[in-house]
Image (cartoon, rainbow, N blue to C red):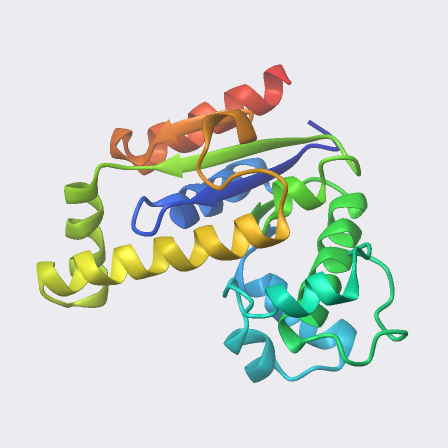
Length: 203
């Protein structure tokens, strides 16, 4: 466990963030979600507002990337000044995720972390899903919106996350074979967190 990094992908409203936060608290290790954006802003000099605008949002630069040909994410993008902002931020974000993962154990939420770290450091990759009705109830209560509004927000957010992830990663978002562990958030935050910790210890 001394070097274990835990990455958590999640459906919107499944409780993935809360589960990850509890895992980090129980293990006494850093937790990175919005905190990761702040660190990227500090390290890159880009404003927090710009990073927040592009956070886990799908790029619209597919045709542009095809015209560029293949290039490796994680390297400096200074030689490609025309690279779209969304791609530049992904490069910076990838470098930041690798950096913090190499510093020691931590929990990282979303942002293709399981794919970025695939060949970098030992880690446990987790995906949290949950029944749609369960997610509607959680989002409705948290956001203080009607159930129909919560359902629409869930669909849009999941679509956004899947598009972002599947564009930048060779692993498919939410597919069991892309992760070490998939679990249902309906079992409860505490139970899910403990399962993750137990699996991390076994790994």
